[in-house]
Image (cartoon, rainbow, N blue to C red; front, side):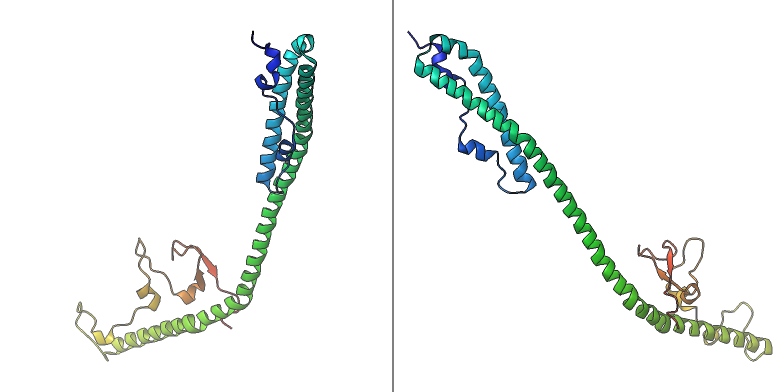
Length: 236
């Protein structure tokens, strides 16, 4: 005759033995979020397994107490005690680990915030140096090396136009009506108007020196870009 079912409680119920390995599994290896999450999952899993084992042991406890040998009763009661102890340990560890995980996640978020603030500070410092030291130099160079030469060129072109008109009125120079202007008397175009492409509608960009503007950051160019005034006083 086979052994009664309650004789195989330890095997049939798959009792979770509370030992050092199980307990250590509920402890995070490091303070990282990943390790705390793993420990929390282990604690929850151990608690669920212990609860199932306890329920199964309780269901068969009456039969063991009624018909089991003293050794079988002892083993069953010890198994029940272990399951209850493990369930208690898990129940204690879970809220502690949940709080620890929340703290660790807050720490990660705070570190990310600190990193963003540090990056903002470093880039602001670099921009402050660039605006305070480099930009005025570059703006002054633009004024003296680009804008002033352009202004002088436009002034010279206008002087030449006035002189050309006066020469025509005085009869100093002439050509047949409808004939192209002789190459000798063709006025040079405004430098920027010659370089900048004509936009739809036949509008050409005015002289850069008239605008006193710098390109915007998009790099699309006039007229798509808004423009930023040059640094005040850079042309002084």
